[in-house]
View 1 (cartoon, rainbow, N blue to C red):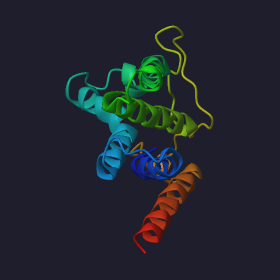
View 2 (cartoon, rainbow, N blue to C red):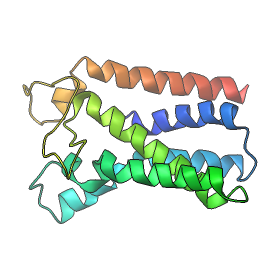
View 3 (spheres, rainbow, N blue to C red):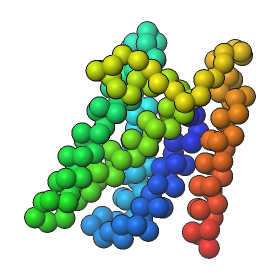
View 4 (cartoon, helix red, strand yellow):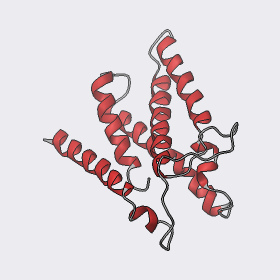
Length: 165
């Protein structure tokens, strides 16, 4: 995914806003946490470009592992549900890690992701993008899957416009 992570985070936040009806944190913080979580795994791109010299695919780093995010999500959700009081930290960590899991799921659509690393060193992807163009990112822009990204962006824009009225 290139452009749909942030809009998908917005869609997730709007869905959860209706489902949770929480009041532990402000609406602005609620949306901010989820939207940052939805793009956060790509912070590893700084390491990829600045320090690692692009030696391995950035989806191979731990921020793109389900084995990293699922325990964080489960522990924070368990803490949120079973603490004696509703914890702001538990809510924030659950929302953030849930959005990060959404990111990993979306990346798996057309990008190799090492879902079970470090236990299994194998990339998984739903649909392959054939390399035909230079630079490499044009292959993704001209692939049919980019329409899915545009659809996600369009849905997020429609939800935003509708909620402003």
